Figure 1 (tube, helix red, strand yellow):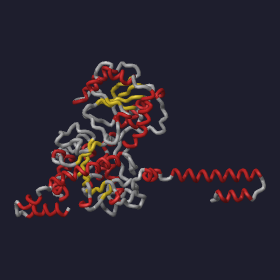
Figure 2: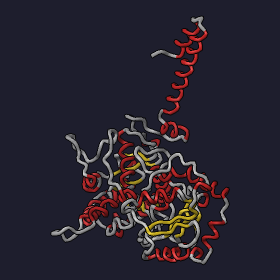
Figure 3: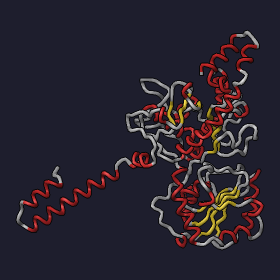
Length: 461
C-alpha cells in the first residue's frame, strides 16, 4: 500500500503543479485516515488506562495480586447456571463456556431485568480465561486466597422458568434446586469455616431464593431491593443493591433539549397495585387531567416496550412510583432515556448510592408529600429549563454505571457491583474473625474429630 511519505517524495520530484496538488491532498488523506483508525481502536482498553484500572488483553489472564477483589467460584453442576440456557459443553466437556469465543444467549423480554447473575458469572470466567475484562474481580482456584466465595446459581431465571409445579412432581424444579443448593453449601468446608458470611448469593428477582433465603441469611445477597425480606435476613449493612437491566434501548446520540420534549411528566404501567403500590392510584386521580401529563395503563404486552421508549424520550420527567415492591426497572429505563426520574417510593434503596448523588439527576419525593393536592405538579413545574438541563447532562454522564454488557467495561454495572462487594470485605472479615474467637475452646470441649478437624481447617486458612 502506498505510504504518505511515498506520495510526498513523488510530489517533490514532479514539476507539474496540478499533479503536485493531488499528491499532497492524497498524502494528507492517508495520514488523517491512519490517525482516525488509531484513535478509534480499543476504546475500552484506553478507558481502563485513563482510569488506572488493570485490563486483560485478549489471551492474557488477569493477575489476582493486582485485582480489587479475589473471588472463589464454586463449580456447581450445569443445571444451576448455563444449563438453564440450554447450553451444553462441547466434546471437551467442562462446566463453563469458553467466553473467549462467544457466550450463551440469555432469554429476552422481562427475563433480562433480573439477569445480573449471568453478567457477573461471565465476567469471572473472562478473568480466568483471558477474555477482555477490566480485572476488578478475578477468579482464583484456591479458596484460601479469596476475599469472597461466589455462588453461581441463576436464581432469578430459575424462578422465572421453573417455579411452577409440573405434574406428577409435587414440588417445583426451582424449589428442588434451592434444596440441593443448601445441601451442597452445608457440605462445603468454605461455608463451614465462615458460616457463609463471605459467600455472595444472587437473588435479584424479588421472589428468587424464596425458600433458601431464610437459611442463607449470613451471606452477602445481591438484590434489587429489600421489599420482601425481613431485616434479619437482608439489610443495607451486609448486602448489595444492584440495578435492574433496562428493557428499553439506549438513547444514542440524544440531542433533545428541554423544548424538544413536549410531555412534562410521564408514567405508563400498572396503576392498581397491592402493598405499597396503592399510591399509584392516588397519583393517577390527582394527575390524569393535568396538562402535558401522560399517566396511563400499560404493559409489556404487544408493543408496550416500544411505546414506553417513545414516551420516555419525548418527556422531561418520568414517574417512578412504588408498586408491589419498592423498586422496578422503570427507573433504569428512565435513566437511559435521559428522562429525569421522579422517584416516589419511601422504602427504595438505590444502587451505588455511596458513590452516586442521586439528587443531581433525580427528583425524590416522599409519598406523603406526593399525594397532597397540587404538590407534585407544582414542584415539577417549578424546575427551570436550566435546572432540568443540568440533570439531563448528569443522566448522560452516569448512565454507563447502570449498563450490563459483555465484555464488561470499566465503571459499568458489573464493575460497580464488584466494587460495592469489595467495600464489604473488611466488614466480612470482622464477622468471620469474631466467629472464630472461641475456636480453641470449642475444639477442646470434645474429642470428636470432626470438631477438631473444623478447628484445624480454620487455622490453616
